Image 1 (cartoon, helix red, strand yellow):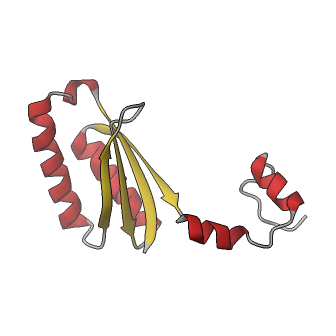
Image 2 (cartoon, helix red, strand yellow; image 1 turned 45 degrees about the vertical axis):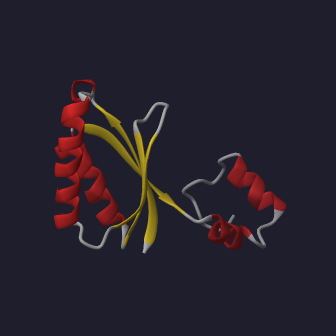
Length: 117
């Protein structure tokens, strides 16, 4: 299973505390019925440009996109889904990269282009 972060910002007209709970229940039920392989890890309400951060696992990008789309369409919210790696996995991934390769990653050079130079 792959790890994903979902950040959500409610639309201004959907910030009534009474309706937010009902809306969240309907969206959660829809996700449970249509994305049965999704496993929720953590749900957080946050202060900042987003209202919520959810961490979940899904079998693939398509399923994560579907979760995000359900939140957008049925939750009347702005939603973004980001792939994520646990820190340990990230450290294993970068082990052995040269300083030049790390500098290119840090400065955004070659982003999206993995062909050898």
